[in-house]
Length: 361
Image (cartoon, rainbow, N blue to C red):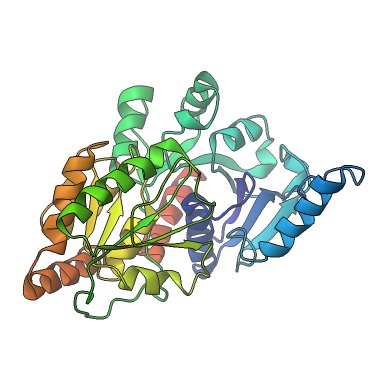
């Protein structure tokens, strides 16, 4: 088998699921013996002028307080290439067999790169019309790259909206070393969990409304939530709410295991990493019919599907999970972990390897 040299081209790193997913599939390709480079924008934060004394002090206080993990590229088995400019240009990366864009802007960046950087591919993790100028984003889906999609709904979008029937489905996986299922019972106090996101399509406001509706029936309901941004003032959380700001990666599985039900309230979701990670930890999931999660949640088997933007429907589905007797809940918990067992980064890397080898024949 040919050993490939692959360049991943990424925007600024963060704690977003898409950034984490790119790193994990790249590392799985390293395990298969390929040479993998991950080039990403690494611009230093802007410091206010020292003469603006208050702003300057706030800047350094914020940096001191936030000495936590800030992105998913702080270490990797792939070769990390931090680039101190934007956009990344072809001289920033080595020659390769394949170069993979990972975000609509990066798809534009690599458009005119020479053949020395290899065949061009495009990892599509969302229909990113929310991410920038709509026409500029749509243009990237019409570029003659090999399209790699992470969910069935994205494969349909590429075919129906952009006329590309040849995209390859490469699902996200689960890091089974981190999210290992162990049989467990319901919590002594009913508990629901969710990820908090500040963008509107993550559905935080609707989720909080749905949880308040549940608390009318189950007043003692606890809420465990984590995220990489402080709560917005307009997103007033429900009662009995505990928020974990940028929790350590080894704490996240424990947070999943402290919940009886995981809520994924997005209006549109490329895949929904917290949903599948929670399921892998034996947590039944209530998710909206928002795209990606429909690939790993089977309605009534390992969770429930709710209507997008419908707080009442979400609340009713959460109550169904939280009101289960111990045996029924335990059965759904086992179903959650077993149903997502096929989502594995090494299996996905094998599919990716085959797709890339076919491109460079």
